[in-house]
Length: 98
Image (cartoon, rainbow, N blue to C red):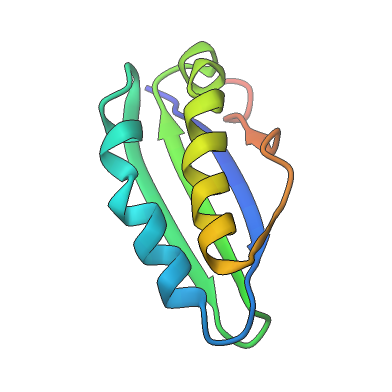
């Protein structure tokens, strides 16, 4: 079954990447409890001062329905750490026939 992803890249001030990741992880239960949630990841690029959050969903509709919660969770983490969020509309879909 193909999954649908949302990826958001955030610029995080030096020395606050771990704090940003912890803030996202601390609120992850809100996202994990949503219909269609499969997996979530926070990836850190320490050299560039960036975090990439990726969530995987069973359908595009479930991914899109989760956007308001994603905005709240990532917004709170950004506020707490001074991070700048990228576009939450960064959605990925599987190739045709997958």
